[in-house]
Amino acid sequence: MCLAIPAKIVEFPESDKAVAVAEVGGVRRRVNVDLLRDTELAVGDWVLLHVGFAMSRISEEQAQEQMEILLMLGESEPALDEVRGYTFAES
Amino acid sequence: MKYVDEYRDPKLIAALAHEIERTVDPARRYRIMEVCGGHTHAIYRYGLADILPKNIEFVHGPGCPVCVLPTGRVDDGLTIAEQPNVILACFGDMMRVPGTKGTPLEYKARGTDIRMVYSPLDALRLAKENPQKHVCFFAIGFETTAPSTALTILHAKAGNVRNFSVFCNHVVVVPPMRAIVDAPEMQIDAFIGPGHVSAVIGSKPYEFIAAEYGKPVVISGFEPLDLMESVLMVLRQLAAGEAKVENQYRRIVTADGNSAALRAMQETMELRPHFEWRGLGSIPYSALGIKPAYAAWDAEVQFEVPGVRVTDPRAAQCGDVLKGALKPPQCKLFGKQCTPETPVGALMVSSEGACAAHYRYAHA
Image 1 (cartoon, each protein chain N blue to C red):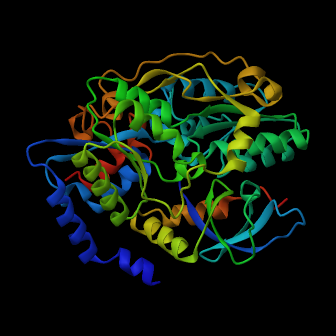
Image 2: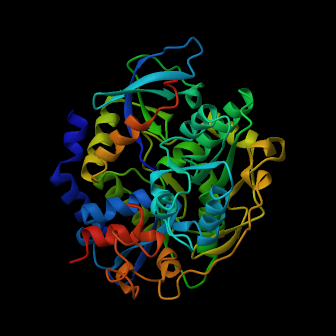
Image 3: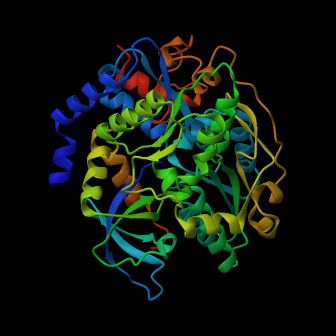
């Protein structure tokens, strides 16, 4: 729950840009990016996810660093499980 | 990925360790509290306490949401779960936290409808899919997760979802830090400030700790080098007789934080006059409740919540460990009755809990 999961924005499926499709470790899910509405978010940007919400825009290097931290802490699998578990925007 | 390679460079670690050794005063002891449970986990995982001079002690702080939630609130949430036609949705970490009559997982096994979710929006989706039921989301966490709950409440209002509520247990990070510096027995010299919470709230809310209490605060990242550099920054302030808020985690944290996240919280939530913390007791204005304008989604308004206060199991010394007064293995139950497989106290449940981290990395 406290995991900060790096993910790449691959699509904005809706016109209002509150939702994005994000990808991490081959897993793609819709996530909420409304809390970054003050940021000019674009396809290809990396973000840190907390419980389904993008909270910070980060660089690709920071994304890589965060993934390594999760790996070191033994949290990379739980992180992928979490992203797989986001089902809220599929309906 | 040059940047990451640099961070992996053992020479840099050695250089920082050398600089830290040059900066410490061997005649004094340093007690540095890392507030965030993620930092606690990282410090254990990297074995940082072994790299640093022996007179520097990491005191593990209260920044683990399931660890600080008192048993009474767990029981209150489970009481809601037992109401007719209710589905209680909670994060995975919560599922194994013991209430007086068992964990949410054990209640689920006995037939109570409790579902694990990864996002508050998943709980809202459950409500939409089960219109004949009421879905209550057991919300926990510091300012990293509170904005997500806030936005979910706003979604529920916008979609007029009436069979959804939030049992709000969100806490804020700064008041317990004040409680800790106010406690004379704590003797904390400085704080390593949380990384991702600070991405939301910014670095400004910590300034009173430096200004009023004269304690340095360094907001830190989670890499070994981040934490080593933050320790060095703390030591340099102490050596110079300074106290200020410094931001080592500039690549994520700004002075003002995430304004959209703060606005969502301000719209839907307000500080409670009092909230009980495990180990720290009642701390004024340390937790968030739901504003009256959103009472339709406030489980504490929609349900009779007993509001029980439950003392911890007498033998378990979670409170003393949470305050940093005891080290995990000094608790009588540590590694005996209380293990990650059979946790008696919440600090053994979460990977961010000091006991779970100690058991995993330092317990022979």
